[in-house]
Length: 58
Image (tube, rainbow, N blue to C red; front, side):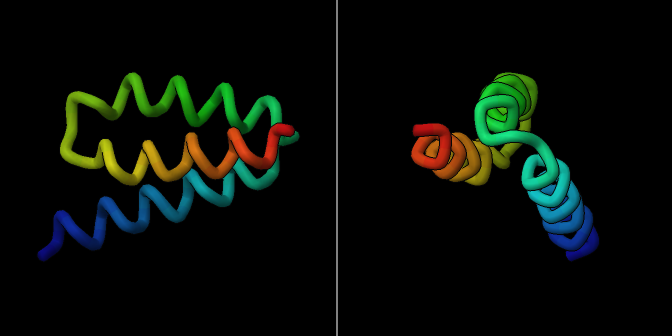
C-alpha cells in the first residue's frame, strides 16, 4: 500500500514538473522518463504522459 502512495506521489510531482515546461520540452522529458521508468512497473502511466504531451505538442 505504501508503494502505491509513493508511486502516485511521484507521478503527480512529475506531472506538475512537466506542466511547468513548454509542450515540446515536456514531450521530450516524458519520453526520456518513459525509457528510464520502463525498468519499473509504471510503464502504462508513462505511456499516458507521452501520449498526452505528444498531442499537446502539435
